[in-house]
Length: 162
Image (cartoon, rainbow, N blue to C red; front, top):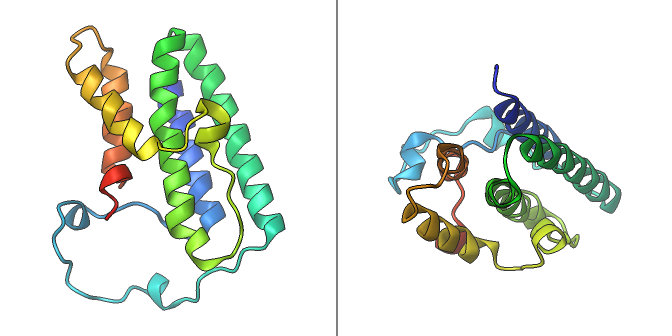
């Protein structure tokens, strides 16, 4: 990859999948709400990984560190507002992924990254509010739309989780 921003985003998501112990990518047929043909994959037959408090602390610290690197890189390429708007959906998605894929199997508290970085606890709502706002602004850089599209394509649901 020649684009530093996307290299770092890709690296963050690959590392998150490694930490979670499985692929977190949503296949195309699941995104449209279609019921997939029920075939069990080898991954589904494996028992879910057990996470300790130490595992969760280490996972959070590593993801937080990668987000810091990404923020610095985005700040080098974009103004503060655009950096914020690009980092936000990624943070929202990380919290959603951890809550739905990891915390469902363990009794461990996950301090929300969105609360730490953006002082909010409703990123699933705010994600779509920001998206609605930027869609109506022709001066919005294409790279912001790309990040939101990436998160949606990767399976972000937010307020539409259920």
